[in-house]
Image 1 (cartoon, helix red, strand yellow):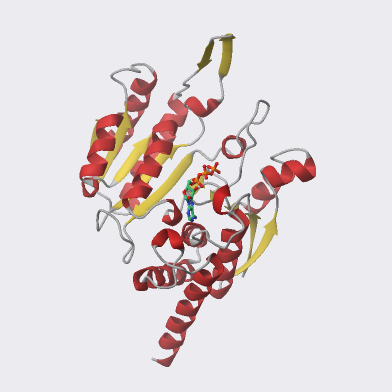
Image 2 (spheres, protein in one colour):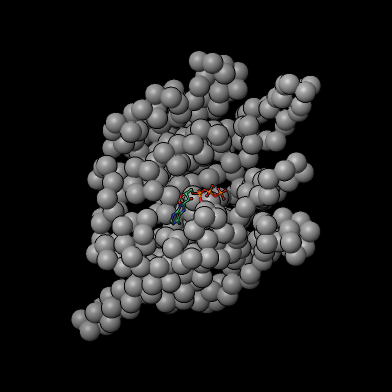
Length: 342
Ligand code: ATP
């Protein structure tokens, strides 16, 4: 079966990590026809908009997309492409699995947690105004509908994956109404999943506890802004931004993308670590039912990371983006040949 999937290579290091991911997917044996569309700075130069309608239409039609990081030009009048895409497609759950990987030096071993970040509102709702020359305001919008569905998504995932605990991060001691409503919805969902432990931790204390003892956590449930910040913090626990994949899930469509941004300083130099994009592609394959191909990609990637030789400079190696992808493909082919010989 051939799967049609939208591909947004993106800006900065996006096209390089996208090329690496496509090569690895091809080697996995899964047949994908990529529909390539442009968003971000590249699209602005060509089409006069950072988010052409064609991007949204393609994702709606295909149901799934693999997306590289896109840059939103600085300046008034440009809404973030990522935020717009998530709102247009109602991709309400941002899911980021953060797991220790053998071979990657980090402060902890055996970190294994999953972040569920609300993806459509909070301070990202874009409700801002300049009150006068010296004052600006942003509105933090929290709704029952969005909070209930992200909470339910986190608990459902915990149940399906046999996870034990959901921790809600908040600042309801200060933002009593907005974060208070988020917690009210989290508690309601928790009551429907009595077998899963539920705890609430104030977000600043949560940052400290994550740094001191990340093994204490299983599933994190967070409003949009705290989720954004904690995603980078958690990436730092397992080797940095180059290795953490992600998914933006809605009821009808799903967009898979790495946690990292476009990293313009290293763009075009064959330096970017393709791991996060490759693991995002594996998540996509799992989502469309290609479990075996996804497993092959994950195993091949883990093997190359564990060997620690053919890895990019951010992981202490001297290999380029393309070279690392080639090493992963070679590893996948080796294990396929090995399985065939048995
Ligand atoms: P953007 O403005 O699109 O968010 P950014 O450079 O501000 O881009 P990130 O790309 O998220 O933010 O990352 C910050 C830094 O982390 C980069 O400058 C780079 O040094 C490093 N980094 C991020 N992703 C990778 C990667 N895939 N491989 C190697 N280094 C990376």
